[in-house]
Image (tube, rainbow, N blue to C red; front, side, top):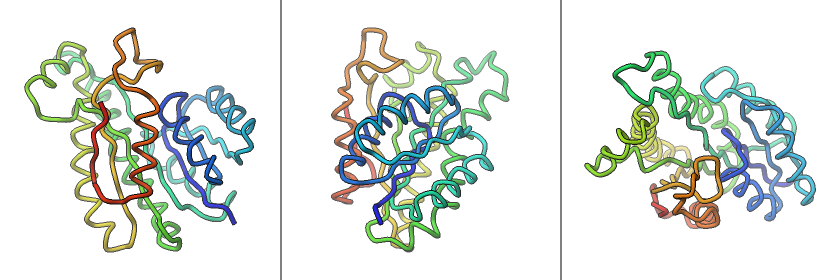
Length: 229
């Protein structure tokens, strides 16, 4: 039986590159995101490379939907070896006038869904060797003056709060999951990834660098957080 990676928050950038990298190692890939058309397009690209794919429309901010996706992935492939959380929502950009529901949605996408996915996948992760939870996060979550100035300038306050909470959750959960024999690591992206939807000509981070950092975490299991810039 091949190994399986489940990717929540799939898109054509980081998570697609991660799917290709793990697929090249023989992993089956389950991808979940809200946009069904984008999911199917991504699935076709992966299948064209000989990768076994399951694509399930999934709202990462909805814990029940996330749990259902995890269950479908296990039913399809019979194992969950790696969980990759790549979901984020750039909502509540200006906290002085944003609907508070947007802030809740940003937090749920970054943190609540992550916790729900780990809870749901944990029984299966504990059954396999070298199980891992791999998280991508953004540098806006760091508490640094220059970062906070950029968050205000780019109106990314809700995202920054969610990223900061996700970063703390990663640190806590990494210690807790050690007791269960499951590794958790985080790649914190310190800038805009070139060629992605967020790149408006100012991208500074190479997609390959992020992809390779995620795979290196899985292989080496030395660090809880690594930064890519």
